[in-house]
Length: 271
Image (cartoon, rainbow, N blue to C red; front, side):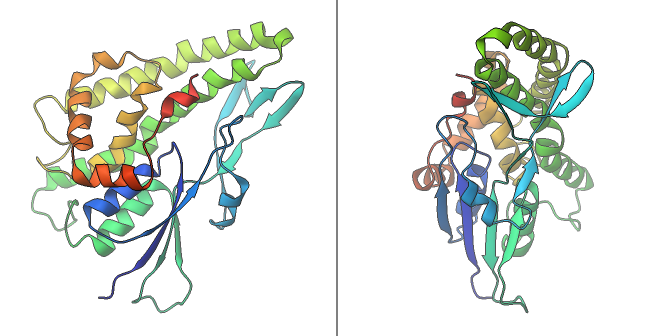
């Protein structure tokens, strides 16, 4: 089969980095298109919306007085909504075997990982449906989907509620701080801690998440480990996660991905 033409639309300091790592592990060639965040709002540039047909993804909801409003950040005297933010990562693929001349457009990290592994992985980094080890298959699917389906939601809330008070006008800042602190203490921080504790226990005495080898589960979970620097928790409380992530950082494929894309600095979201 002829090699696919893969283009990764890579947003700095985002979940897109693990897609580069996946492609490097599989030794697949790709074109990289880099997008920079707005230095003030930290949002993706509008041109990234042109890549994906939906172009937008719901970011978060702000809880006010027991109701859910459109998520927002406050800038000066203006209230700017951002419940629709640009999708990243996005990958376009021209597959020689496809009957259509149009490129495939894929968004959502999990969908991208699964498609690439199934189509171009040749059994590498995956635990397939025909694998004899059903437990490994179940764990593989669980962690592949845990990353975005469970772990990312409170992490994103922690970023949102760290930024909202800083953007609020001075005269409403005390109220905004009180609301944000309440959400963080009652909802966000307990869930983030529980998720990291679950990861920590799973990695006890294990090199990788599933089957004693690197798989797509580790690819997907890598961003959750990267997010420790921006999470509302004590990173030192999770030595197994840090050990596991150091093993990832030592891999040549990870290092090549960082050379091409850049190193994530997620601390920008909490400064």
